[in-house]
Image (tube, rainbow, N blue to C red; front, side, top):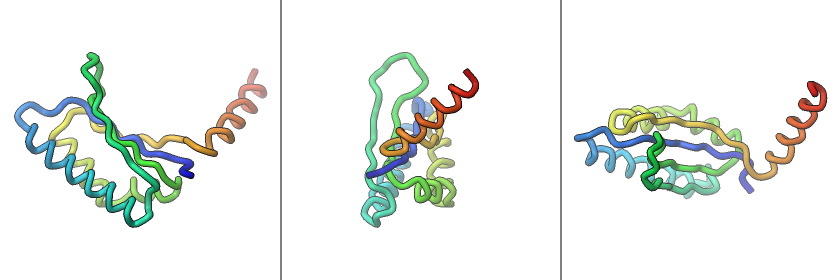
Length: 118
């Protein structure tokens, strides 16, 4: 089971670039699908958020091994997708996340440090 994730979030489409944003979205979907088919990531999902007055319009969530996700994040192919997305949507961002078995060890480190700094 995956112990890490990549959260790739974006804001609203840049006005007048909506068709281009759909193209870049398709490029990202193709990349995530290939990574999953090749066994590099465990899974991925896309989410469009309902209107809520905030900055976040949607996000991808990629699940996988921490080291493999780090390699994806540092790849030129990922750089290209993020740069292209930044040209057609506002506020693109990529954030690593802890999940699965790493949650317990992360919470353990947090509690140990909280106890020490009490």
